[in-house]
Image (cartoon, rainbow, N blue to C red; front, top):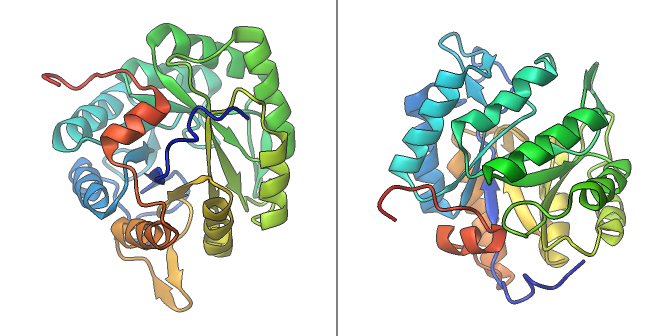
Length: 286
């Protein structure tokens, strides 16, 4: 792994506030409307987040890849905050591959790019090589920075193949996120995370990690101790501590910011995050 981000002593905190799995009926506090998403973005930026990873819901609170909904969310969050806006290209596990490619039409700063198929509970999260390759090339052409999501160690090898086949992404930086603890993927343990980190291609300039559910805190601590960055949010974890459900995403961001600050790696500002990731300036008048 290269050391181009070695001078960055702070922590990139990503918030993933909604996801595609949780039902609004079960978690009324889950931000699903445009107003709720924007309010969440504002609060999480204030708490220490510098990047927001968005899944969008429709009027019935169901996951959607509707172009109008995606564009409205990107524009509204960009207007209300300085956060790096990242759209999920994973959608839900039921979305067709061709529709997932249309996410880039909304012109986000960044997009997720999952580096392989993985079992996802009782379902399959499909990411075959032709889809990954097409998404990568389209992101390069549209000057969108991909975040390479790694759910398993085999995904690290697929990242190597993408870089060998298509070169560096737009901006020249390579940022990855280890998603650990998904039933069917790599476990949310320090040992598994460190095995993945040890395998990263030398072109990788920064990495983050998230632990699903009860793996949330152990993976956070492991990532910080090893120089990594963090992803938190209700997409990944809805329990703050035993017996206490998360009421707002900024609780998770604030805790991550506090731990990062205690370890003398305070949260990056949005400007610093943009420099770390090499994103294109899309905010009007900036």
